[in-house]
Length: 132
Picture (cartoon, rainbow, N blue to C red):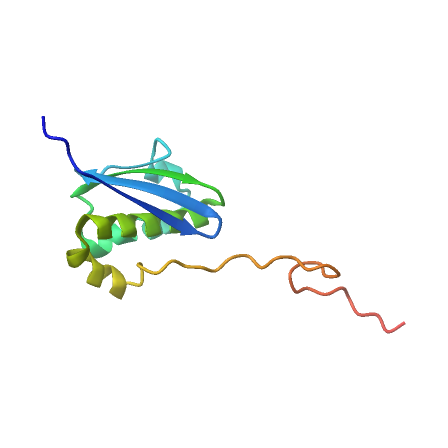
């Protein structure tokens, strides 16, 4: 019995982290033991998460098993996207890298929430000014 190769990568976005396991298959994607269309609430987040497959046209070539923790659903969708991209690069970097790079999916989106400062309501919102 031949053991199929499993490609692993980690993707991150905001405070979310996704562990992605890709193996040869028919295009089945499970996130935290649920189908991805049941896990992600909106069509936009679903399209964002699966965009590496659509860019490389590799949706029907791989099955993905994903574990994602932290953050909200939007950040998790970004982490899934980043993880799938990195796993595809591990699987066949020479073939997929130019396509993924052109689509802007290889680079991690490093934007984070700015911390709250003391004396302010939020990160930058100041208290109302009073002359008297």
